[in-house]
Length: 342
Ligand code: CP3
Image 1: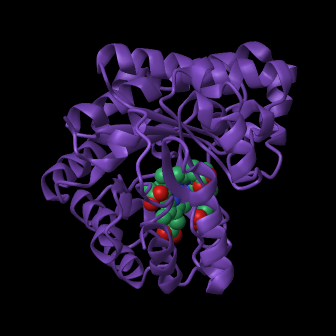
Image 2 (image 1 turned 180 degrees about the horizontal axis):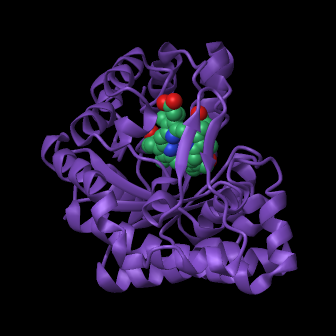
């Protein structure tokens, strides 16, 4: 029987104190992260330097004793492995070469040709497997196909995923071919992370909230269900967390529709609503507003306790509703953990 708290929650156990980790826990709010990134040169060089990527993954575990470590990498490394150009504009975020035609999709590499490019990521996982404390769970991850496609089509982050929605209406065949290619690549990528030692997988669908109605079913549910079914067939018992961010009512029934063991919740919904509507079908993760990591104080303690209280009747992994931001104060993270565990 496993004693790792995250694995117990994912198996459906209601624990007296929820296990805890934090999206973007290795990141710019930490001085030790900024120092290691400077040593690597830039963000992408850090992702592909296995020793330094393992080092930044371990930093928040050493500082705070989180129950899980998440592999340090990025959802946009897969498009790069599939053949897209990728770079980061200082302070502005990611830029990619765009794909808007069937010829563009066909020019991508096949799903099984990504592994040479991604070998350093698998090596980071192997290093972490031997260096993490024995009670800490290692989470691997990828972007969900819709979110990854939205970056590959627009060539950058967009507020409303306009270019991806436009391609979906104008050229459905190209759009679905791209979704399928990403889905297949994601399965191979995550399978290798699991073989290298990842114990849990998380799928980030950061832009699921802009898919409505049948589009939500076709592009937020179906590709994720396909990835989960294939991974679970290859790796029996593998726990999977899905994060259809800002799905709203789409959270209801999402675990059952996709086969996910846990649904991660953003902070646009209240924990009381989610405890009532989502948690009865399984483990949930979330959902403290990351703004509290900047503002701190009694407001942070109260909001943290409210999340713990709302979810205490069922399986729950404490987390933020989205990634911690660079302006966050590291002392507030300690205060949040104290409010959860203390
Ligand atoms: O959570 C973790 O600590 C693990 C590592 C991780 C990163 N990105 C590191 C990162 C994970 C899980 C991601 C996921 C990711 N990447 C998502 C999905 C989650 C979400 O935030 O919605 C998305 C959409 C991306 C794409 C991406 N990467 C963007 C839009 C940006 C720029 C925005 C920003 O925060 O600067 C990145 C860069 C990035 N990925 C950073 C980190 C630590 C900051 C880069 C830096 O250090 O300069």
